[in-house]
Structures are given as structure tokens and as C-alpha cells.
Amino acid sequence: MDFNNLFIMQGMLFSLMLLGLYLRKIGMITDSNRELLTDLVVNVTLPCSIVKSFEMEFNGGILRSCLVIFLVAIGIQIGSLLLSYMLYPGVEEKHKKVLQYATICSNAGILGNPIAEGIFGPLGLMYASVYLIPQRTFMWSMGLTYFTECPDKKSLVKKVATHPCIIAVAIGLFLMIAQLRLPGFVGQTVHTLAGANTGISMLFIGSILAGQCFKSMWTRLTVYYAFVRLFLVPFLVWAVCALLHLDPLVTGVSVVLAGMPAASVTAILAAKYSCDEVFATKCVISSTLLSMVTAPLWCIFLA
Figure 1 (cartoon, rainbow, N blue to C red):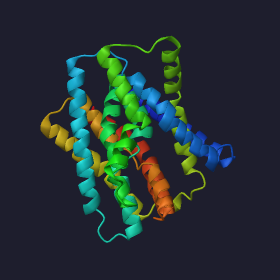
Figure 2 (cartoon, one colour):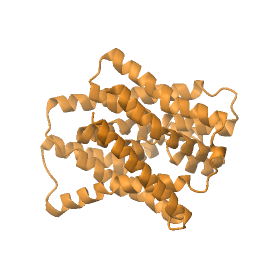
Figure 3 (cartoon, rainbow, N blue to C red):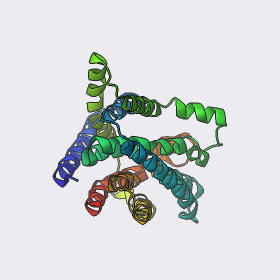
């Protein structure tokens, strides 16, 4: 684990986040084109980055590790689901829904992927991509039940199967197992778009921070949630991985991604279903800011 690269990358991510905040302040990033940034990340740059991460020599050890981290991720989602029902007694219902959703759905895709790639290399990003499959499944199934009725099974399967990132994982796995490379200009196009993923992701996160009163973000409830999301969940993941003596890289990726802040979509769903989008935004922003400190600390701990 290269800590010099870690701190350089953290500084780069923070600088991009500040740039996103500045662009939002001067009106270059608006509500309408901020949605475009989200669509670009989820539908274009992140899938390309995932496909690129699978371009490596395939062997049985990698396949076994992918299976292990997939099972670990399922366990994390089930554990997070149980914690979401246990950790927020007596909280107002509209706030409780936000906290429960944000406990099982982190920003591991947008923020976790560049960190996993920067710290653990291409293999780390590939493991991160596999790790995210169960989270995305929970995000659009059990997660939605906090805000609305559970969708029918047919709709759920279609939603998950057609998600661009899930499709990218399937393409990447096929290319890796078959030991194929994307041809000519197609491969170059995918690589170029993959390189833009981190920049666009952090500009978007920075734009969320603009227009918020810094002091108002720090309430007892938002700080408690940040403790759960950034410390308790990854600590429990580390404890289980250590108990099972899992591969250090699998453990590292699992713990770092488990310690990511609240998913930005939390605020969007809260606004749509009248669950206090202001409170949800505070949870997203406060946990995102604190993760800039806790993520390096977890990496140091795992070294």
C-alpha cells in the first residue's frame, strides 16, 4: 500500500471537490447540469472505468478472490440492513428513513472506486466493482422500501440487470475470462472516458457542498450517523474479515468501501418522498467531509 500515493490522491480529490464547490458558487454548475454530471458518471464514465479495471491477466486466484469479496459484500449488506433497524430507536420517522437508507447505501461507487483504484491499483478497482453488485441490488430493492412500497420482482430484476454498472461488470468479467481486449478505437474510447471518472465524480460531490451552512450540518444525529457509517460498519467488517483470515487485499477493499459516506442519492429520494431532503443533504455532506479524514486512517490501520 503506497501511502505517498494515498495522500497525493486525497489532496487531488479534495482539490477537485473544492473546484466543484467554486463552480457551483459562480453558477457554472447549476441544478440542471449537476443532474447531467450524475448521469455522466453513472451511465458513462464509471461503467468505462469498471470495464478498464478488468483488463488484466486472469487466473484462478483472482476468480476465487472475486467470489470471496462478493460473498463478503452480501454479508455486509445483510449486516447493514439489520443495523439500520437497530441503531435509530426513537428517531422521528422521516429522519429514521433517511438514516436507514444511508446506512445500507454508501457512496462506495462514486467515491470508493477512485480510492480503491488509487490505493490498491487496478485489481483493487476490479474487486470494488464486484463488491458493489450486492449494494446496488439492495439500493434498488430493500433500500427503496424505506421510502415507498417494495417494487415487484420483475421490475427489480429488470432494474438491476439493466444498470450500466452491472452490465459493465458482466462485460469486464467476460473480457477477463476470455482474455480479450477491446479493439482499436473502441478500447481507446473506453480508456479515455474511464480517465474522466474521478474528476467528474468529485466535481459533482463538491457542487453538493455549495450553498450549505457549515455549522448547521453538525447536529447530534448527523454526527452519530457519521460514526455509524464511517467507523462502526467498517470496524465490524474488519473484525469479521480478520476472524476469517481473509486475503489482505480482499479485507482492505471491503473495509475501505464499507467506510464510505452516505450515498448522494439519499438526498434525491428524501426529496421525492418528502422525508426531509435538507436533513438528508446534511448527512451526505457531513459524512463526505469526515470521510476525507477517516478513509486515510483506515488505510493506515490496514497497512
